Length: 323
Image (cartoon, rainbow, N blue to C red; front, side, top):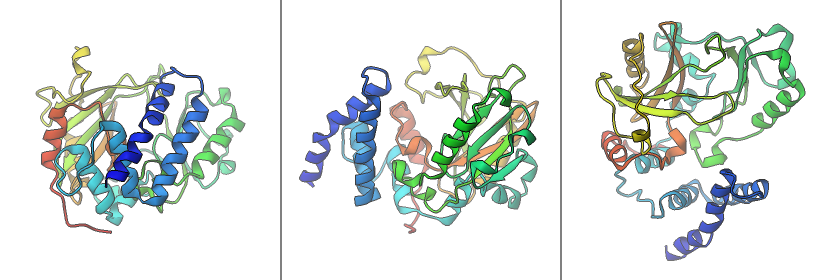
């Protein structure tokens, strides 16, 4: 065991340099990122458990306790590694989840599908509306938001989509439920405002079919700029101190018109799972389903407070292992 810890310490400086590069502190971003990706691929090849321990050590500087996990991140990693229910793969897939939502009697909450493609070459951009969203169904953040298709570099869009389709996303952070998903591109209508801004994103944290709190993502940008996160309790009566930076923001988010319907739907959809985050939009007073997330932030979020880690960790009751 000591040898593993020593190995992690030896490459700790490499990881931290990569984090600095992401913030623009270094100019060798592509090189450092390639090194990081090689390290991740190597550790994943050894075992997903080894990669999980490595990522936890790099983030927190301490050993991951999987024998007696206590906090939220530890229990999420345990579920990721040891509870591989096939329904997680179906519901984590942005296209296949639609059949589950329909089976639960909630098909009316699904956004319209404008097209499903196995290759970017199948996309007929002339047939799509001016505003739309293209996304790959088997990963995270593989999205292209089109506000005006006449301004798109179609060759570049096709290249990016093809590159994403080639990725087995389970190897990126070791999120095993992504393994086996069929890579597809789906096209949906753009649900933002007329000025091009993105809608608020409501993410309901659920435990065994019970909604506990909601995270609101505000200020999201199409260029990928990070949003501001606000946590509210289930009844939307109080802000929760779950984000370390929350003291910097004094804005209050109004309870969405369709919030009660979001909670009802989230609790129906989350019934089979020890934990899942169910995401929605409120579009002109209507609840619109977005996705189901089992490994938020790939199970490690250093922006969360100790209060959050303890409170949400307590709510997860670990099931019997399932491989």
